[in-house]
Amino acid sequence: MKAAYRKGGEVGLKEVPLPVPGHDQIRVNVRACGICGTDLHPEPEAEPSEHWFGHEIAGTVAELGPGVRHLRVGQNIVLDSATPCGRCEACRNTRQELCSDIQSFFYLNSFGFAEAMIVPAVCAIPCEDLPPDIACLSEPLGVAIDLVRLADIQPTSNVLLVGPGPIGLMALSLVKRMGARRVFVSAFAGETVRVAAARRLGADAIFDPARTPLPKVEFGCPIDRILVTAPPPALNDAFQVACKGGIVAFIGIGHGERAFCRFDANAFHFKKLQLRASFASPALFTPLALQYLREGVVKGDELISHRFPLDRMAEAMAVAQDPSRALKVIVQP
Image: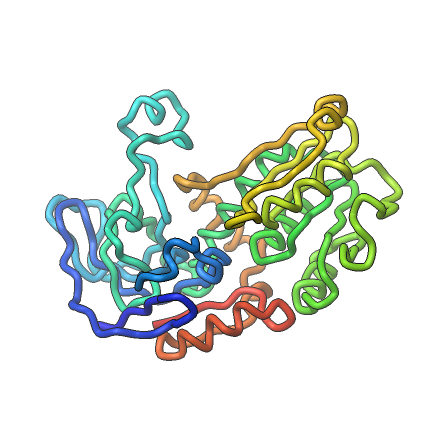
């Protein structure tokens, strides 16, 4: 079978053996896999070596390993990128987000930019009623759901979204649905497709931080909720913008110096701010994400800008790195 790999700046395809599922595992024929920002900007230590990737997956069950009884061959599914075990102390104390024995295909070094993959059967969620390119959006949408949950949006909230990538735009849809009073977006003018999507999704105003630094923007109201999907240095501006008692929810990732931010901790303290880190691993909201996609709470078709076959993986990655052209890019083996 074919599988895509990354090595440094190179993206290529290789013929690899068809995987065989072990106990409590299944083989999945991949039907769609979305390109995530972490696929575009992997950890630097992974760059020198060849590695497989792709974790936003919809597919079809192709083979059951020993012990798998709740699925059937031919069933259409989506995958949690990570699933709580349900057995550890945290899981049994209703704290599945702190699971100490996460089940994931990451640990099997089996990923979605391939014709097939091996996954723990517990990661599979049946989904027969959505096309695979829409269904695979449930993984990043689950991340957006967690981010918005932590922000504790209220009908009186004035919200600033920093980073209008696919997850940020999904969060924007959710915030609007929750009835926030006003919603603003920070986006660079060059992110033309994403700026247009933010307007279409109902942003009250969009500000370019390259033209006016966020702490100098006149919002016309106190900003009490901020959603940050940008790298950690963006937190400094968020803390300055947030009003007293504000909540900042954060999922951004950076590497090297961009893994750090520097801010006035005294001001953070005196303003009674809260920083809430969202890390949706294990995934907890895939069924809810599928429901939102079915009901049009998040309109998957409006978020997908490009679809590519696996044979054009390098081209798909190049397009996905251009925010003037791409929203969500889907690869369909």
